[in-house]
Length: 504
Image (cartoon, rainbow, N blue to C red; front, side, top):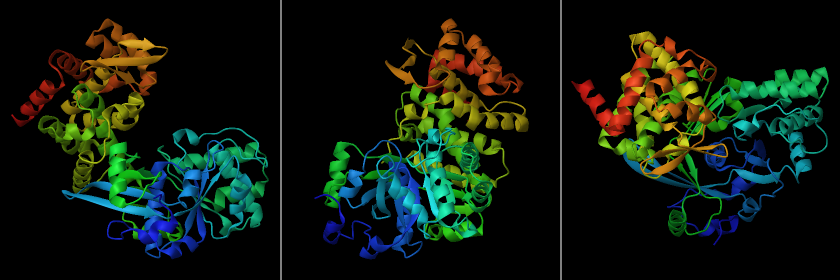
């Protein structure tokens, strides 16, 4: 039995959160670029929750931006799909099963462009959401015509141009645009691209002014782990429990945070925030950005290579290990928290760190360390260099735990094989991929197999780091010593020794 509107009356409301029939009559208020599992388990999840509580009361038109597919899976299920949220809250394991009814239609840009453009004439449509991957927010100089532009900014500009003409450029017809792509200042960057593309298309000055002044491009921060469709065995178990098949089912953690930069007027339009504690609308989201970037992402980056080399494949396996978990937790609470380059109350930092530890230990989410190592170098630069500098500024010496994490990064980047530009390391008896733009650089400098030379060459590459790492007092010598120790003794012996010394 496939999920659809027709079977809702046969489902057990004690097991599931079900939509009321009236939800299917709600007007379309949101245009969304992207059909991916993350945005459906995130923004669409928030909107569905609000709709079910008679708040926001609007549905979503989804634009399938890539390819010419027609969204058959959504049509077959009347736009319905299940979000299974699982995790630990305050030490208690919880599960939540929701049938989401937020999506009204899924339109493929390649074959339904006319219908998509018609949405610009809908006065109730006030919101644009995007999740097109980070590559999606880039300037592609293309002329806007009757056909669907190739890039997401091109499609959005075409929609805004149609909107402007449909409503005579009225201030009230402006949109609230919220990119959910994982790049800093995503709203600001998208606005810059849209304006540059509009100038390339030589639009009239009044249209350019309307885009710039009457549309709000919100910076936003997204935070929720969505693992997507589960394994076949887990899917079979879930479908047996729920009583139906669902080709769009996804699994996510319970935690969710959508921090959106905006004022009271933005908050009024995005009324779904009132029904979701995970949606925060504020004129300044720096606090949320720093907490996530440093305590969650920074911890991931300092630990991913180290934990993988220690033999842990899944984040929770490392965090639940007594020795490794103690090291990672202490790094968060004592070192990273102290070095966050923004003034944040200590209690706020420690509460967030505890929440992150619970998330890392989620028994339902298989978050793999090897996946976190993708573009390891750029992550280390963006997330953790500011922590290294701030810690050095505050204490005059490097953090032993951060040094260990950096040494783990360098050892992970040791390639043993290069096949057609693809690099591989070797640990725990098997090869592993090194998916990093700097892999070739490390392949060359590791040929000497001398930790001191590797560290010196790494630190000398100021172009890679956009910084001079040798300016960090004591850092180079400490990394050389720790890297040598890890090579000689192994990760776990080094961590045990480090934590014993801290206690002593």
